[in-house]
Image 1: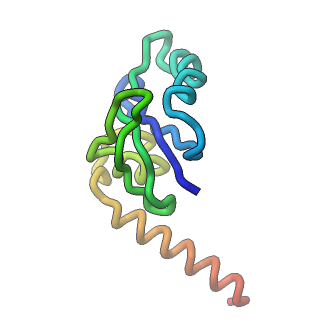
Image 2: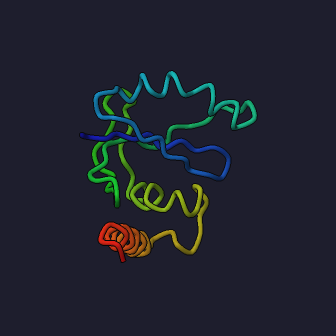
Length: 118
């Protein structure tokens, strides 16, 4: 299955919205705009980038949204991959996909050990 994303800026946080590739960027944003408006305390949140994701364990942001007329940014890959750890805030992990790869590897090995009864 393919995946798309929209990166929304709310105050000082960049928040990724990831959704199935069958949906249209502009239609997803049209329906999600109000909840982000509420989150931003009635300020208009901005879509700062949008595109496609290759992979989900460690995602790579590429391309652009034709319907929103906005491209993926270089920093989107890091923001999406580090979001569970940083919650969209800048931090020292900002350029550290290696941390995520290591964590995913440990999680998979732990799961495999449980499956094997170890």
